Image (cartoon, rainbow, N blue to C red):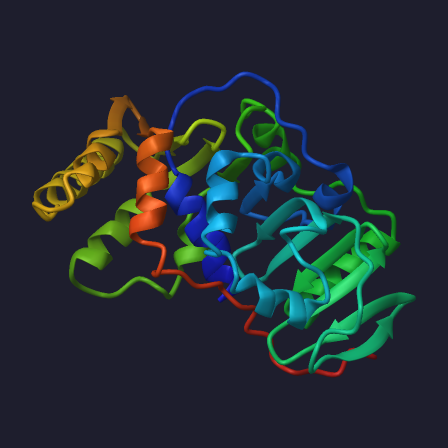
Length: 309
């Protein structure tokens, strides 16, 4: 499910448009990403935590299921993490984090070591500690590969994706870049139906750059470059159609939801499609209150393996 978490993060943010230079990607986290990565997604937790939306989530205890994650991994993203970087090469996905980790042994995990690094191997995930400020989590093989790169001094990372990430405006605390969905969606697209049609259109997207700013509500953008002008038109028409259907499906007793759908704008310029989403702070807080009971925390579905190999 960690692969799905990273993919969903990218898809939710996908929108289009050029952006000025600004976002800084922690070089240590960047070095842990596989050089052949096709997707990167980052969250600057130190910038997210002070926002009103995040505080609203905490006040409503909508993040309380992170308690399970804290127990399983030994560190709490709400308190310990400064920056998160998820990366995937279409086969393996890892999540690397910087912060302050005074890690205790997680419940149900086995503490071991790999080439001098501490590993906590559990039923649902593997967490590797490089030092007191850097951790990496994911499937065992992917974590080992990241530690191997770090120990060998390989600091190259996926250079093309990192260069694009650094062009995202710095006010976006959440961001994502992708070189396309073909490898990520391979073997996962149904053979028929609407999901198959959407999957084929996403496979035609060659590049995605996206960001979200939580300072005053929810303001998201992204840039998607398609293989052809027609692919961009088809994808744009699909997004507009889904937004229209969403608007028509709003219950009469929830008129605020209309403002959500009205805040979605789609533009096309040849092969590029731009989607922007603007949800004002007052509306975002209402939605948190309204749908607070519908929550959940993705888990790391890692097979139990022997770490000392």
